[in-house]
Length: 226
Ligand code: SF4
Image 1 (cartoon, rainbow, N blue to C red):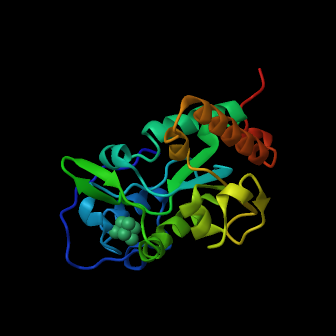
Image 2: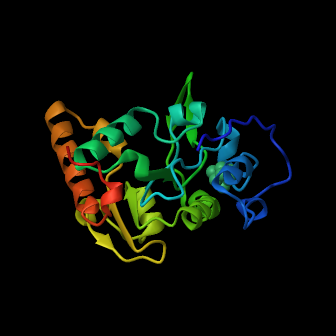
């Protein structure tokens, strides 16, 4: 699916996800509709809404926090350095990237301006709740067998507020959202490692988590053995 790139002037209608999500909407329709979303204030600082990408037949849905600076400019999820690291980790874990639907809990890039640079700002609980219908609409269209939350923001939004990625990562559990749900770290946390040795260790642990999730996936979602 190639998401549309739209530039829509700010509107003052206060359009919320509830107004914009039509029951019959396809994933492409959701992309278009989200460009008009004014469900919270984050859109004012972003270029465009970035929903998920991947097949509606994807077995796995990976959910991060929000699009980053690159994603906001390019209009695709996980295309920056964290996305490249995720691609590598999926390959090492034997999960077929084309069988993964990848998205975020919040659809606009939330940032604060420091000089000429936009710095990532964690969305607050109200913003996450306001944006949730977009993610629910994606889940309802993809019907993933496994949802993998990348990082605490996604895990606490989708699993439980008390979820601790540090101690509960790599575990899968039943959920009302999908047959199984689990969490691991967000790949951007690996990029922020203080030194090379730590980065290697965290990458290894990330791949180990993905391998545990891969055990629950049908063969069609795995990289064919050579
Ligand atoms: S972050 Fe979500 S709720 Fe807020 S304006 Fe963007 S799409 Fe709408």
